[in-house]
Image (cartoon, rainbow, N blue to C red):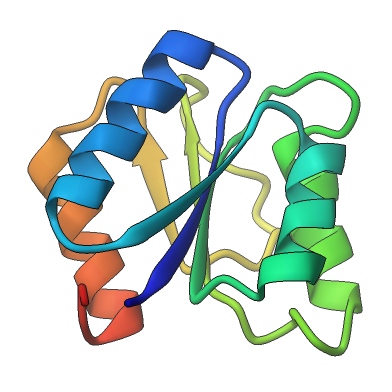
Length: 118
């Protein structure tokens, strides 16, 4: 089963996203901030990371940079989501989802970047 790391500081949104992604055949790990997400990524080696941009403790931009600098995680695609208009141009991400986004678009990206959902 393909593992997805989901990160958002809104626990209700995080639970809703997890239910959606799990119902599509993925194994989900949840994190409420960037530091927790980084610890989870190092421990669980997810196939893809979906992170909010504005987060406490470590924001999405710092998480993306930390993942990229970790040799064991540098190849993991990251989907960044945010209500901001666009991510910083220097940030290496696989895709950007502007909030609010369609559930189908998230699932499409997960399948695109993992090549499978199960």
